[in-house]
Each structure stands twice: as C-alpha cells, then as structure tokens.
Image (cartoon, rainbow, N blue to C red; front, side, top):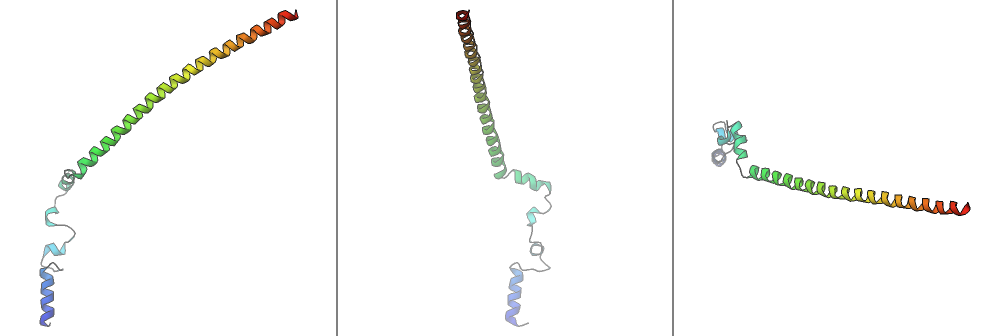
Length: 113
C-alpha cells in the first residue's frame, strides 16, 4: 500500500471508521451508556422534561373539556326549563281559546233557538 493511502486508512480507523477492534464503531446504533438499561430507559424517559409537561397538558385539556361539558349541561337545563314554561303557556292559551270558542258557539246556539 502506498504511504499516503495507508495514512488515510489509519486516520479513518482512528476517527471512527468501521473496524473490528473498536466496539463503539461496530455498534453505532446505541451508545455505551444506554446498553443494558431495559426498563430503566423507560423510567428515565418519563423523568425527562417532555413527559410531565405532556401529562400536565393532557390533564389541563381534559379539565377544560369537563368545564365545557358542565357549561353545556347547565345551558341545556335552563333551555329545557324555558321550553317547559312555553309548553305550559301554550296549553293555557289553547285552553283559553277553546273556552272562548265554546262561549261563542253557545251564544250562537242561544240566538238560533
């Protein structure tokens, strides 16, 4: 091998090229500090700053939706009471109109006889 090529190959091996002697360069998909952690990796992930904020955000969003449902329930309850009052008023108006019609018919029958 020419001297220049040998120097380039040696430099590549020292800087992290693929070689059989160095475990870190052969197994580049995981770092040595994460090897063998198993379940501890999940626990460590849960302690990072992302998971608590995501959980807090989910709880906040759920709480906001619960408040919205309570507001909707109260508004529906008020609306239902208004409809019940309208229904009662409608029955009163219909009954009054029926009595007036009966009086008018009774007067007409009285004039005819």
